[in-house]
Structure formats: structure tokens, C-alpha cells
Image 1 (cartoon, one colour):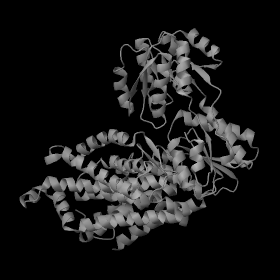
Image 2 (image 1 turned 180 degrees about the vertical axis):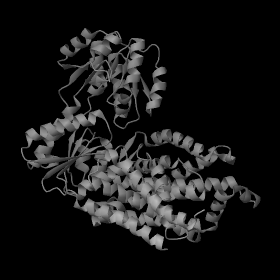
Image 3 (image 1 turned 90 degrees about the vertical axis):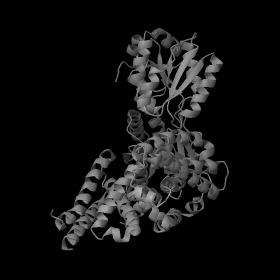
Length: 293
Length: 327
């Protein structure tokens, strides 16, 4: 049981910032931002490149975060004025990022196995210590994100997602806030990439494959499960954070349990899909009972 | 509220049952080797086959092979490695660069030795690991050797098109191939594709003056070898690759090593570790015995001289393996 929990936690601490980025993009900005896969790799790639060039890890991480934010600004510029559908803009930006990531990294894979990173000192002592420090970084990132969401800035972002016309009428620069919103979510994704590259020991151009979709699946699941216990609208920020945590935990727990039951990984995604459906249906049923119409 | 409690109970019941079953799953007491395949590919199965057969010969005691495929999913790969660590497998044998790096990173605080199959980890790289716990099987053949062989087959060849993906291992080899081509008087034009659909587009954009198509050991391009085979037949030019599988699927010929051999070498290293040799004391296994794989049907379909390939192989002392399968 402890082993399973440990295994889930080791994946959660790397994935949570990305899940939160997906959640903000999906529930606050009301856009399915497919760029997050690319900015995840960009964060990892920029960090790995700069670290291997001898730049201090903290500075490398900072530049990697800024590069992730710039990827977000690129998406908002593509869909400027709502002329291009956010989903399409995200796909185009992700497409562009494939080339950018390769150019930045110079090669498709950069090894960090023998480099000094923000986490190497901890992992050199023990895995538990390493993952604890990773967890602390993760909590700090999520805490900063929560503070931002709880501020006036977060309120404007919600307004942008819910009713951009109203925001315009209130005299707020819509495009500016759209850029800030996407910069925020993509920086979170880049942060996840930075943490992942340090834990797994490399940055690779293909390491972001399917991350956004996994994130979307996890937060939908988390939201539905959360609906069982509480009215999320009354504790919005806490609810969003909890949905990410619950959804991602269930996803990784299901994956690890199935693997430990010796299920052939070829069938894993299919079974995982069915498990998610069971959870979603179980979570949806009470709401149906309460509102028979 | 009552409904909510029932639903909560149902969810917890499902979860707890699964956890109990998972906890009761196999905890190996005998020697277990975990093999990590990064994705579904014919070459992976051949490597595993070679590994399994050789290990039986080299190590007489009972060994359980836990073969897991990560389906090209980094999260799944991480979960598989963590599972193997938790189950205290005796050796982990990842296939490929990414899987090796992730395994080495995750096993740095364990005593589990790693046998890296088909990665580019150098002696210097593994000495930097603290502690060094990796044995390595290299699979790449120097592009210079392949270009030299191509020149022996086609002495008048001057223009060759190299189609490659953005895979990590391929990048430096492309540059080496171009440089080797220059030495042999062959101008090599490289075309990069990042996905299979792009390969179809690239195939239509191949320069008309090219005298041959060349593919390195590159899993993405090899997956679409049928597309290039079709182009080679239409243009009456040879399609030269660097692995056995692509020749079976329609390429003309290749200079390479049987994929199985990577598994064979990996099993020898694993057996040595099981007999007590520290992983880091084992020298990096290199692929020495090169084979020319020939698809006579594909060669004749693209109007190529089969005898020229055979003569060059004979001259350079390479063994020949014939295959006429086409997908």
C-alpha cells in the first residue's frame, strides 16, 4: 500500500503544475490549449540546454519558465481578437513549438544524468529526499498559482473566460489579459517540464506526448468526483486545485494498480479508459438522482 | 446525502479491492530481469527473443523475464520502472536512449544493475554515474562503414538522398554520413521528417537527379518504408537501409546487424552480472559481425543489379542474408 502511494506521489509531484495549467486553461480561460504539450518540452529543453552549458540551475529554471510563458503569449497572438479558434491556435502553436524545441535543444535528447540541477543534491542522498524536495517545489508552484488565481488578476481571467465582451465594456484590455492568462498556464506547464527533466534525468523532444490530454482527462475526472462532496463554486480555487489533485491521483493510482496486477501495458489505456468511465458514471449518478428532470 | 455515501463507498470498495489484488501480485523471489520496450516495434521483439534464448544458454538457473512495453508514454514508462524497482528485480534492461536515461536516473539509489540495450551511453558517461551500475550494448554501425559499402556496390554513385527523423540517435549519424559521403565522392542530401504523414510528402519531393535513397537505423522512417520502396521502384533507384526489418518490408538491401544480436549481447552481459561481475566492470558490447540483408524481389523491382551487391559483400567479407518478404 505504501509502495503504491509512494509510486503515485512520485508521478504527482512532477505532473501537478501541468495539470493545474490545463485546469486554468480549461475551466478559467475556457480554452483547450494544446500548446501545453509543447511548452512542457520547451521548459525541460531550455532548462537542460542551459544547465549543460554551465549556467546555474536556478537561473536556467527561471529562463525556462519565461520561455514557457512566451510560448503562451505566442498562442494568444495567434488567436488575437478571437479570430482563430483557441483549439486551432493551440494546435498551430504546438506545431511551431516542435521546431522551436529542436532548435533550442540542438538535438532531440539532452542527458542530465551527470549534471548539477536543482534536485540532484537531494536525489544523490536518497530518492525519498529527492521526491520530497520535488514535492516542495510543486507545492510552492501551486501555492503561487492559487494566490494569483485568488487575486484581482485571477478575477479578471475568470471574467475573460466567462464573458470577454463584458470585460471589454469594463475597459479592460482583453488581449493583454488573454496573453497573460496563456503565459501563466504555459509557464506552469514549463515548470512541470523542468521538474520532470530533473527527476527522469533527460529532456527529450517527445517527452510531452499526450500530456495535455492526460491532464484534461484527469481534471474532468477530479471535478466529477469532487461534485460528490461539495459545491465547487463556493470554494472555486480550492476546488480547482483539489480537482487536479484528485483526478491526477486517480489516474496514476489506476495506472500503477493495473501494472502491479500484471496487466499487459498494451491493454492498459483501454482498461484505464473503462476505469475512468466507471468513476465518472459513479460521480454523475447522485446529481442525476437529485435533478430527475 | 445517503446516495453520496453509497457512491463514495462503492468507489472506495473498487479501489481497495484493486489495491489488495495488486499487493498480492507477484513479488519475485527468484532471479527476475525486467526488460523495458519503449514502444511497439518488430525490432524490440527480436531483441527480446535474442535476449531470452541466449540467457537460457548462458545462465542455467531459473530466470523470470518481466517484459513491459511503455507504449511511447513517458508516464507509463516511469510507472513501469518504479514497479520494477519496488519488486526488487535483479536486473533492469531498458531498450533505447530515453528508457536507459530514465532507468539510470530512477535506480541511482538502488543496487539494481542496469543493462542498457541499443543506447549511445559511452564509457565516460557511465563512469560519471555515482555509483556506476550500467552495462551497455551499442547497436549503431559507423555510417562511414555503410557509405563505404554503398560506394563498393555503386562506384559511379554521386548523389544520394538520406531521409531521417528527428530521433536523438540519428542526428549525429546524419552528419557523419554526409562527411563520409564527401570522402567517397558522394553528395548526400538530407531530408528530415518529423512524422509519418510528412514522409509521404517528403517522398514526393525527392530530387529527380538522386541516384539512391538511404535510411539510417531510424524507427520512424522504417515504419513508413513501404512509401519509400514505392518511390524507389518508380524511379528505378536503390533503397538502402541499415537494418534487417526494413529489408524484410521492402527495402533493397542493408548493411547492419540482426536485431536479435543486440539481445544476444545483452543476455551475455546480464549472465555475467548474475554470476557476480559488477556491471561497470563489463566492457561496452559492440556490434562487430556485420551482415548484408538483401531483398532480391525489391532489388529486381527497382531494376538493381543483385550481383553487384553480392560481389561487394564478398569483397568486404560481410555475410549475406536473403529475404524476399515484402511486408
